[in-house]
Amino acid sequence: MLDSLKQTGKTIGREISRAWEGLSDGWRELLSRSSNALTHFGRHKEQVAQEGGALAAFPSWSLLAGEVEETSRDIVVRVELPGMNKEDCQITIDGNMLHVTGEKAFERDTGDSTYHVMERAYGAFQRSIALPRNVSVDKAEARYSNGVLTVRLPKVGSDTARSIPVD
Image (cartoon, rainbow, N blue to C red; front, side):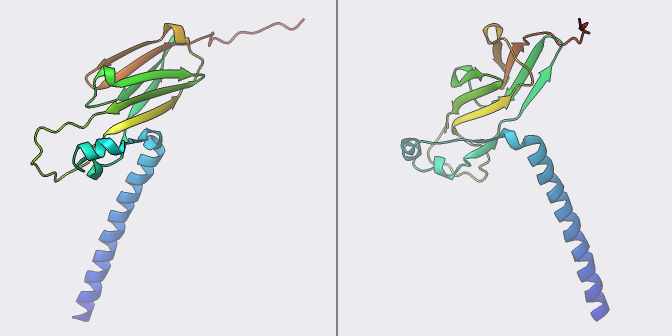
């Protein structure tokens, strides 16, 4: 009987260790790949009061996943902004930083429901993304489609290498 309990304890220990490794790997990847995407959604006290406290129970942090792609001519930035309209966000470029600010509004169809899962964040946010090159702000273009904001920024200067003779 004692040997059976010891064996069960070892098996449980191995399973807990394996589960912990998987969880640790997930957190490491989240932090290494998405730490900049972790965005704070601030709420005004009057918003929380207006929604009868329901908004206070929702998370105030969420991921706004993005990507920065470089082509021969442009830097293309895409940021996922689900549940928003294009009028809800603004884009600012300051040096080599692109800032997306906005507000994700809380909407509720009925006031007499109960939430069982609350993973979406609401409120004002700012997401900053470093640009790898200098860009032409005057020729920048932005569009919003299917919950994804795409900002196309033409690069400034030439990337081609050339030799310069020394006199």
